[in-house]
Image (tube, rainbow, N blue to C red):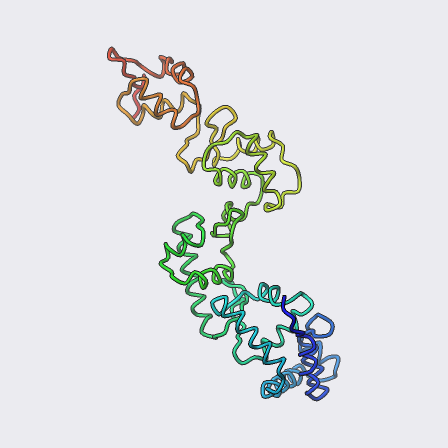
Length: 339
């Protein structure tokens, strides 16, 4: 936090103005009460039209823009410019206010930024949050970059960290990319540090199942539901889950969600990893359906890529003569041929 007294600077500047202009600008930016007022509210109180209030606001700003003898004002402008340039010349508004000072000085900083000739408030639309930049032309560049990132994520359908995203988009300026990601409304950084669309469960989990999905994504391998419950509990601060996650609760939720596949006793993997639903016998059936014939070791190898089971479990299911037939060479085929 810096030592610039923004509120005092604003008071010194406003004291230069006639009383009516001073009052209008003070109330428009909430420099005393903390809440900005509309043109209509000020007009009703002063007994003048909202258009007259607008004129007083404009004329007050024009008079202050011509005033350049305040060293503290110049110091503020230099500080703002240095701060923005450290962030590729742009910064999301709420983050800027937070980093430049405390909540109490937010309105004063806003007023001074509006007063400076080299600062522009941009964005604040369906695609981007409001942000401040050192060049008005930044808005077009940001809009193009945000669209490019969003289109990329919609196509790839998976989160990425900053380095990987920059590489895939062939972007050299990671600082500009980072600022654009911050400004984009539909793109956020998830609990695991990767960026993606805010509707994705990896980025913005919304419940127990999404939390479990996130845990498995991070782990990269199947886990027992009790372990998943423990790890979900560790993520509760990020996921805004207020109650303790019991293992049985997790187990019940995973059973109901097609994203999760039971691959062993109480052990779950993700369908994204190539696991398919069904019993061990169902898996054997699918394996033989995809192959003309296989010996039992080949079948075992294929099944164990889908299920964490012992060989005897596979061989026991394979002995079902109503479904599987073994020839004289020890090869297995389906008892009933499928189309």
